[in-house]
Image (tube, rainbow, N blue to C red):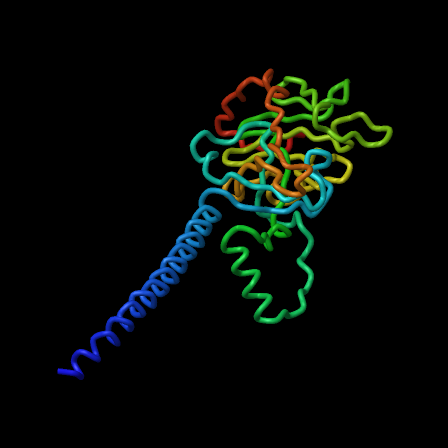
Length: 260
């Protein structure tokens, strides 16, 4: 009888400890679940909706500067297509970029860290394998440079690019390289805003692809500068520049490409 009475207070003291331990376990479990869900959502967003890239060159100055970090919309263009003026990110069609330099081996810890940051869309290690340019010609468009005023024309309409073009010193023409092309089906014609430093469609006309970028190579439309903070803001497509461009004439059986 005495032992039973003595044991009561001991049990009463020990009982609350178990719920407290279970409370911490539940709390830690919930934190892990939340983190896993956050990583999964980030991965899905990065894979199917928005991707991050950085700008490695000055080919799009002054719209985009070296080391700018941008977000690329992957999903919206699937609904309403691409438009003249879009700033697009695309995979190298072949031969546009120099061979990648050999990278010295890194520690597994650094590799794991970059993998995780890439997974959630913070790091962008594949930026050097992609290019960013302004879309000038859509499938069927007849793009010519230059007219008597030094402007390029799309389907016969002159384009005033002064709102975004970085002019070369002593050269007011839209391009120092003449071209006369009709964009084939499922491809686009792209140019950099800094024409004197952009090896874009003009420079690859003699390659098998004719300087055109296949639609399948396009990752998406760049829409936002996220870094540095003092440059945070939307990327302007300058769509009004192309308002006077009419729809291209049906190509029939003629293949798009460089005209004589």
